[in-house]
Image 1 (tube, rainbow, N blue to C red):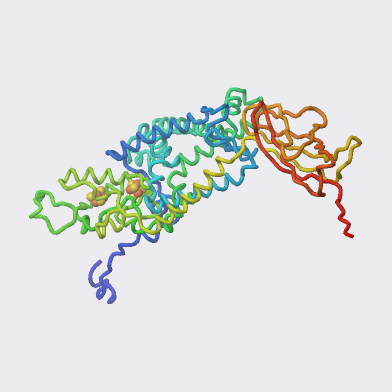
Image 2 (image 1 turned 135 degrees about the horizontal axis):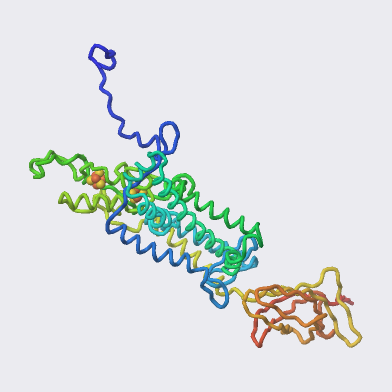
Amino acid sequence: MSILDKSIDELIYDDVEDTEEYRDSIATVDGEGNRNWIFPRKPKGKYYDRRKWVSYFLLVLFFATPFIKINGNPFLLINILERKFVIFGMPFWPQDFHLFVLAMISFFVFIILFTVAFGRLWCGWACPQTLFMEMVFRRIEYWIEGDASTQRKLSKATWSASKIQKRGLKYLIFFTISFLISNTVLAYIFGIEVVMDMVTSSPASNWGRFGGMMAFATVFFFVFAWLREQACIIICPYGRLQGVLLNNNSISVMYDWIRGEPRGKIKRGKQDPLLQEEKGDCVDCNLCVQVCPTGIDIRNGTQLECINCTACMDACDTVMSKVGKPEGLIRYDSHNGIENKQPFTLNTRIIAYIAALMAVLAVFGMSLASRNAVEATILRTPGVLFQETEDGFIQNVYNIQIVNKTTDSYPVELRLISHEGEIQIIGESLSIDEESIAKGVMLVKIPKEIITQQKNRIELEIWGNDKLLDKTTTSFLGPMVLNYED
Ligand code: SF4
Ligand code: SF4
């Protein structure tokens, strides 16, 4: 544009570049609202290698856990549909709901505490989404389609035999892994036996079950083939919570802006620092942005999209070594750590969270220790009064319910321990099968002369295989006692 074509405003004012444009948009969406597909460069470096080993361990754990049994129980079973929960081989029943609530509270306090102190360490190192996306699916993609630039070219290329072959192979492997993941997740819900039965029987034997399994696999395929980083940025509630959980002392993947700025490229032939302009250590190579799977520039500070995957740390360390500067321009640190050179300390907020966590864990531990594997509820049959028998007893009728949370079966014996008296089971003798509920009716008979009041509490013990299984109390009604005063 010639100077003659400029308006007076344009001649007076110099447009200052808006350096905070990144605040108005996310890297994965363009100005028109369309998806910006991210092609991150393949990460390389010591953190990536460490994450690989952690991921191998966690993946083996994920796929192997459904096969682990403790005392015949699965190690972990979360069957929401049938309300059956087994954690560390311990079955939890709806009767243990208070324990479940305590476990959930402990879990959430732990998450908050962990995030306040260590930011999104979980996201980068242990979250199943990152684990599968970055350590399984992305690596398959690099193997089939090559690094970022080749992937970008392939994406833009018109459909050819080679593109169909590459994409077809990639999606076939993606779907196979999604199928494996879906079956493993189903094993955590219904148990490995049910899933093995589903997998080994013909789809025609149960189209409904087969359809459910394929629907699950398709959801995982969709997440890893298409949704990808959007799951962390838009959907994950933990990611959305970062803004309120992180503070200036939280450890996170951070760019050292004190050391790095003002950024600028090294002038070729003037590597000697004395010949360089006054510049920070960041050589503005943009590699940290190119490796980022969520497409952000960590130099803009901690951002909601950052999953702490460490790829930018590795990339920057490589650059720093190359230009002869110390590694760690992008590193694990806190805002205060960088700005004030303050080392990580336990502040009041973290100490308060630790205290709350300890208190909840103590209550949870005590409740767990006092939890009975067999739980009996004995209540007087509603609407039935006491009876006096001809042989001098008062009898009450009771409904019995015994929950057996173990994998053992017991013939049950009830003993009245608070009073002299007898117990008669009505009908067949009581026994409880493994992981089941037994119900029955019984009579409790107590000699008339020891029942001195209308309302009495009696104590009973439940025995099975010569083992005391549970103790319980219930009410026992007697005749009304009238006191005549002279
Ligand atoms: S900014 Fe760095 S740590 Fe955060 S997601 Fe991007 S590459 Fe990973
Ligand atoms: S990789 Fe390091 S040197 Fe390169 S732009 Fe990022 S922060 Fe600067």
